Image 1 (cartoon, one colour):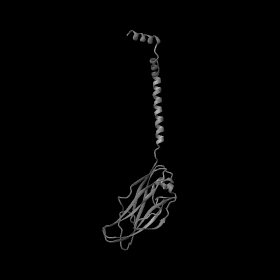
Image 2 (tube, one colour):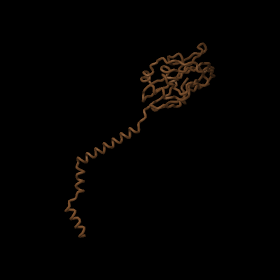
Image 3 (cartoon, one colour):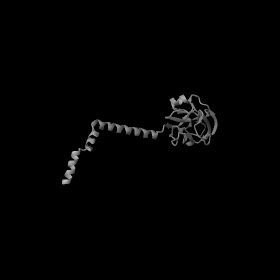
Image 4 (cartoon, one colour):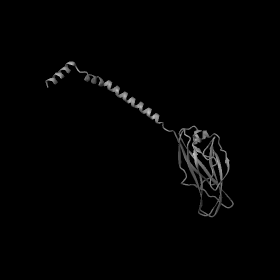
Length: 226
């Protein structure tokens, strides 16, 4: 079993907005040996606290039937998610799907978990900016008298995870940026004005504009002579 490459890798939400995004998690089961009869159990997180994770309450997987719902092992999901950032069956209610399959040699079977994921479950956590892993898991059940499972891991049961990264971020306020820009501009103008006042720029300008009356008369006389 493995996570198919067409599975959704990443989605994001803006904090404070009730949104939904399409998600597709695909599990691939492949048999490279002789004919095999197995049962695939797929666990999909469907509810966190009081909020549904998927907008479709009755999530379905083609060629499987929803056997039951499992309660999470921990009810303190707020504390867990703020430290671990993994949304799986340990903190969420999970729908358990049973998929009976007969695979011939070199045959593959795909199980598609698809629908829209809501941002409602994130809002109840109270985090404005974070990244979570939405994780569905799959395990195999088989006749141990007929088949032997070989693995390098310590697990005696084949287990596969299909994850999608879910990010929530805080939207930047345009009004805030405008206010900061205006204040910054006024401060620059004030600074320039202070420097010019200190250097006597405005005094020199005033003196240039105020002409001496005798000088003005001389200028008029010179014009008349010309």
